[in-house]
Amino acid sequence: MPAEADIMPADFCRDTAQSKEQDWFPVSKRPWNARGLSAALLTAIQDSLAEAIETQEADCAVDDTADLEVRFLGHAAKWERDTRFVSSMSDIVGHPSYKCIIAMGQEHRRDVLRLLLRDLRETERPWFTALALIAGTNPANPTDAGRVDKLTQAWIKWGKKEGLL
Amino acid sequence: MPNPLRRVKMVRSAIEQEFPGLSNSRWYLKSPKSTKYQCIGWAACESHRKWWPWDWPRHLYPPEVYWPAHLPVGDESIQNFVNAFVDELGYESCGRNEEFEFGYQKIAIYAKIANGADKTKHMARQHLLGRGWLSKLGGNVDILHASLRDLEGDLYGKVEQVLRRSWRTAFSKGLALPSSFRFLLYRLRHPSWIVSNLKRRFLA
Image 1 (cartoon, chains in turn green, yellow):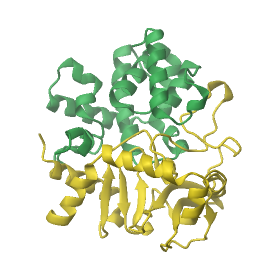
Image 2 (cartoon, rainbow over the protein chains, first blue to last red; image 1 turned 180 degrees about the horizontal axis):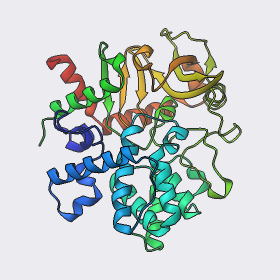
Image 3 (tube, each protein chain N blue to C red; image 1 turned 30 degrees about the vertical axis):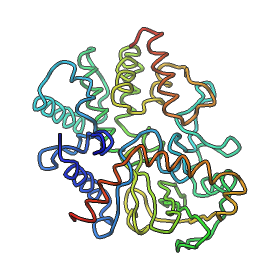
């Protein structure tokens, strides 16, 4: 039998009747799993985050760094849910949640960079555009345009060098 | 361990919700979710690189997506995508003729047209032996669907252009063997299609 990871992405493995539509990334790779929270509590948190983001879409303001992480995770979940079948870069990067994350990065540069790099490493969500815009640099080799593997390696290496990971 | 057949059912259900045209059609999952390539790269037989004409500041190069250097970036028109596939990969236009022709491989461009401007949204590649069309759904799974109509709708718009390339052109440009080999390796590394097809055959 093929390995579990080979069969399907873990984000598909939940029962549709029980899961919410916004659950599109692997439970095992969620950054907040490290805190030892139960699966039910995680789901409840994510539900409330997505709801909050849904109702305050344009609100990118954050009060403190704890709020920052919560808002980042909510925006990331909403962005991923809405663009999961989209290839157009203008639609992906033009999504309000993506823009909010970039706006958050303008104010809290190092904190948002840390969140983006951790999320990139753990969930493989492609944050390269946001990372480059917030960091104001791009550590990848110019010949690696479009190569997600190489871009990921370059950014992780850069994050370690900058003390963000 | 969750039942893999049940998981496949969940995937299929989620995709059919997004693309209602698939509900009454025969279609197959071909590989698991991957953010490493998307539909344009997949149409170009690439599973390691994303393609898109993305306008990106020179000082922050390279961008998240690849686009041939001689073509304009920031231009999402059908013509720009046609030029990329004609210039880089040897395709030629065949209007909207999507019928299988032995000796040719075809690709289709989905686009939305509003206020006279067209914006490309998706591309699909015809199965080499005409079994259907291969589509990578953004950064998600890739599927084999029977008809181009199956994915038409709000998200991808309609099929506006079909291109074709003869097998001879592909071989003469040295494009066929490397991409076929990469394609085979990719399939062998991601055997989800076996589960999917078994389910369709015996359990549907």
